Amino acid sequence: MASVLKNGPETRSPDLVDWDEAGDETNPMDWSTSKKIMTVGTVSIFNFLTYVKACGVTVPSIAADNRSSPLGSAMFAPGVAQVMAQFDSTSKPMSSFVVSVYLLGFAFGPLVVAPLSELYGRLPLYHACNIGFALFSVACALAPSLSSLVAFRFLAGSFGSAPLALGAGTIADIIAPDRRGFAIAVWAVGPVVGPVVGPVCGGFLAEDVSWRWVFWVIAIAAGVVTCISFAVLRETYAPVLLARRAKRLRRETGNPNFQSALSTGLTPTALFARSIILPLKLLIFSPIVSLLSLYVAVVYGFLYLLFTTMSQVYRDQYHFSASTVGLTYIGLGLGSALGLLVTGRFSDPISHRLAARRAKGERKPEFRLALMIPLSVCLPIGLVWYGWTAGEKVHWILPIIGTGWIGVGVVASFTAIQAYLVEAFTAQAASAAAANTVLRSLMGAVLPLAGPSMYSALGLGWGNTLLAFISLAMLPLPVVFFRYGEALRMRFPIAP
Image (cartoon, rainbow, N blue to C red; front, side):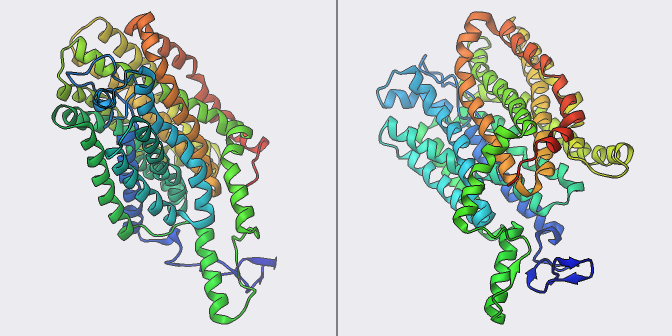
């Protein structure tokens, strides 16, 4: 094994345990390509599954009344009216909260999951949270009351946040910087495609079975993926792996001086205390993290706000059935898929090219934001297109095309910012992603509650035009991030 430098370039401490210099198969960075693909793929699948349940749209059943939630979880929202009727509740705020509380769990979970992963490693957190997500999905299916359903959904969201909170850290653990753009695009399939698959499936389930079966389907799928994860996933967090190696060497050799080269020297309690406040420190005291998190939170808030109208529009104005109304999200899905293809294909080459031209070969995290500059224009275009074509009741295909533009704009922002956070804060990638997730989830849970009032006052056309004006005002921000992000990082460093 290689050791780290101690007193000079030729002096190495034999007691500091590091990776072997060449071809160390226990080093996640040196894993085979197939092993890395399986790891990223498994995390992405579970991320997708939790977002199918998380990303919200309302797909009312034909019998649904005005108690339908304005914000929905893609798979669950079709059954909200059934839930409210079964539990004899007519509270509109509760019909909204029973769905949006899942996103509050998404905001809370990363603040605990990310710090624990730095103490115990990624793998135990993945397994524990995957099992918890499956169990609380079962609990939702068996919920005896509305209050218990709310509590179980919050816990399901908290446990379900693990793939999103830890995914960025896992990618930083195993993927070299020059290939992370594609890996981020694969991992982002869940947050950007989940809102499409969920409504399509949820619409048919709402028409054919009870709301409880929605949770049973999710629980079964979660159980299958959890079993796969036990077979495929391995620990990737280098400090934990090296600490285990040092412990083994101390036991085998009797030498108590062996220590991990990445050891902080902190006790587990002190390490956890430091780690648990790091996401909030990044969010509050790092301007670049704060601004990027706020930007993507607003973009996602617009997406969730859009979801408050789509199913209602196609049901009332275009007379789609409960099963077919979910298909109207295919435009958003195709746009998201196109955005993923573009970012996955061009993020790494553009970063290489900019490094060669602007930084004499030095790769800078800000280069990951380059694609965000032109593609962010798609968001206001899509908002205006969808708003006015739907508001004027033109042929149903035109609003669907408009949502495709929105999908491209949202994906461009999400993937670029996630890739930036991974490269700018590699050692704290999980904490940076957690900070980003907290604000985005809170915005997604709260902002859509204002949707019905806004659209009632302004209509679809001017309501979405208002959102487009805000997104137009935000267009210079990607340029600012690209040009001055490095200066902000250097001026306001955040110590772990």
